[in-house]
Structures are given as structure tokens and as C-alpha cells.
Image (cartoon, rainbow, N blue to C red; front, side, top):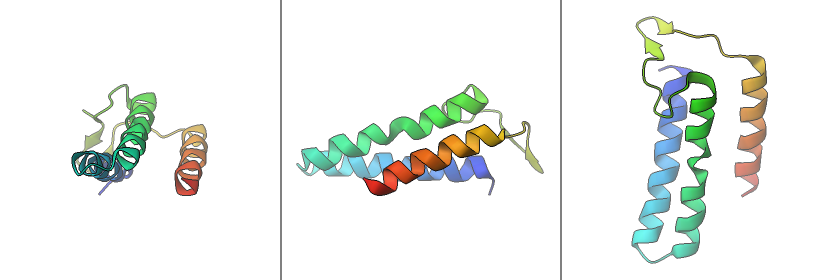
Length: 83
């Protein structure tokens, strides 16, 4: 599993959790869960595709990940953990 695969998995779990909360009538949790779509924005910043199309290849990935990207991602994850 690659770094990008993990980002995709994490995004899907958090967003689906928000939808489940909305569907069961917990609107506060649902609205906060769907705002976590920023995971898709992180993907788009690096790969120009929110859904990571064409980034994973056999044996790795087809782009280098800049250090600034990791720093921004780490800061955003800290904000989510404070949530």
C-alpha cells in the first residue's frame, strides 16, 4: 500500500462516517464529517486529481512528494485530531 493509497482510505472512512451520521439524524456530526473533504484537496494539490488517478504505478508512484506537502499535511492532521 502506498502513501497515496492510505490518504484515499483515510478520506473515504472519514467522509462515509459523516454520511452515516447524517443519515441517522445526527446532523452536527454529519456536517463536520463532510467538511473533512479536505483530504481530497490534499490529493489534488499534489497529483492534480482529487481521486489519485494515474499516481500509483507498479513498484511505487510516478511523482516525488515535496517536503512542504508533508508539512502541510501534518499540520492539517493535527487540526483534525484537535477536532
